Image 1: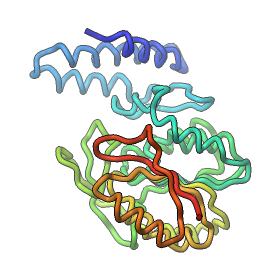
Image 2: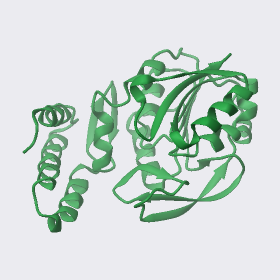
Image 3: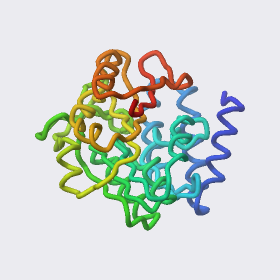
Image 4: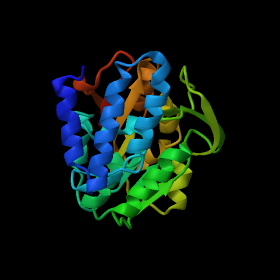
Length: 274
């Protein structure tokens, strides 16, 4: 039976639908998703597929921007309690600041920041399916100052295998996660060399959410950290925590663990030049 909390969430999501057809499809998605928990296992893959089909391409309005949803797993990104700490730091950005979104997915943070700043936004998303919706959302909001790149941020240039589960691209990773069914070859770039090519002359805030590859991303932006000294919001897998913090200390960065972000397998830190 659907809980009152879930019912409230889905009602609010339905009200965010841009058009009548979007609201109707959100209702259909909610129906299919609710049935998953009560139907026999044999029906669950079909219901998952129907939920994905119902929500794919639905347009919602969220925090003053429009978003086209990519799959069922993207819905929870737009619940009000999702990563509230990140929004707090994004709202500290000033008009001329430059923001880099490493692991942008479909553009939850990219679109919001690009709509409120005059400065550049660089969005990096390696998963080709998510990248397609990132581009859709940039176009949907008529954003001209976003540079979107379909690459993996890494410690060196080359190519890597990116693995993910179809229907849940939120956990795409070069560090293969149990249960992932599909892998694709993607271009890898050091942020140091990439941003030099883009002639970016300042960097103020970098958000990094890369499912276990956070140390390699930071290694590939060492010159950025030394020269521009941006603030960082980084998700860190617990197994990487010691090495990541050691690396940041070496570059003379201080950090604060965000208490409300702590989970059994990861946490977020806010890092800044000491």
